[in-house]
Amino acid sequence: MFAVLLGDEMVGSIAYHRRTWQGEQIFETGWNVLPPYHSRGLASAAGATLITIVREIARQPDDPHSLHAFPAVDNAPSNALCHRLGFALLGPCNFEYPPDSGSLMRSNDWRIDLADSGRPAVTPQRDRRCSRHGPYTSDS
Image (cartoon, rainbow, N blue to C red):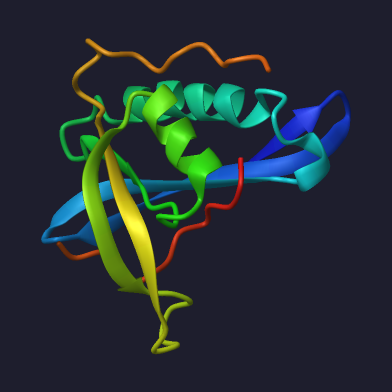
């Protein structure tokens, strides 16, 4: 987990973890930027940095080679962020969130191939089945 900082102030977080999903090992990511700091490019900068870090980790043969994000289908800012960062939309899915709650959440499954550096994460702009464990995403 990493803090998203604006100067010395923590204004959000971004994280990734390894998990088994649809029978394969993947990395999953999620982020949260506090509402007063939305639309400043902070989530874009954090996401681009995280992808760079995870790409480096994924060079190891035993590590996953894909990174997924699961924002809610109605979370337009986080879905737009996934697109800006170079994730491919695999489609909507349902999964249980919070874990073991019995509550299903409608999410989009976004994936980036970490071995393919052909489409790098973009520079921040100014201005099926899903895992049982829910996303960490919120409005970016």
